[in-house]
Length: 158
Image (cartoon, rainbow, N blue to C red; front, side, top):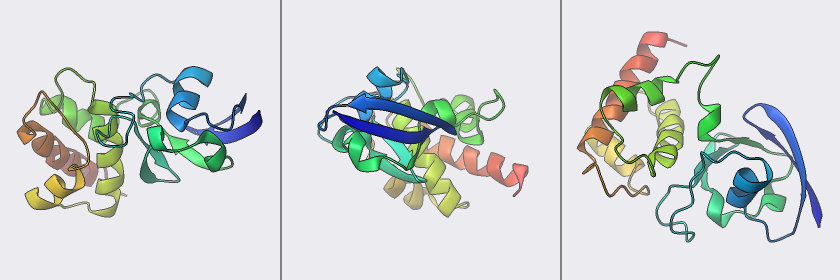
């Protein structure tokens, strides 16, 4: 058993876990943060994507002990003061989700992407979300959602 201490969604969190505990399982089972979804468990679908020190990572491929001392942002941590983030609002306004299973991975991926590319082209968006699979939307509304989130972020300013 190993001690794991992380900052998760701005809050220090600690648990004692086996060395092989995946970050996705740590978040879901040890911390009760079930917004991080586990789909393929091979890092292909992107449903488990979280932000590790601001960068998207596949939580199903990452051992919790390997990220001790770092900061993790899950889909639950995207909202601010109880209000949905610009990315969350963009997805809601443009119907960028249907069943919702893949949505947490898209939201975290888009959050990091728009931080680095605030005015993306369609091609930029498609490339950015290409590692996230969705079986419901056909991606057109996801691309629209990311563009709308960029607009909302621009309106918010720095």
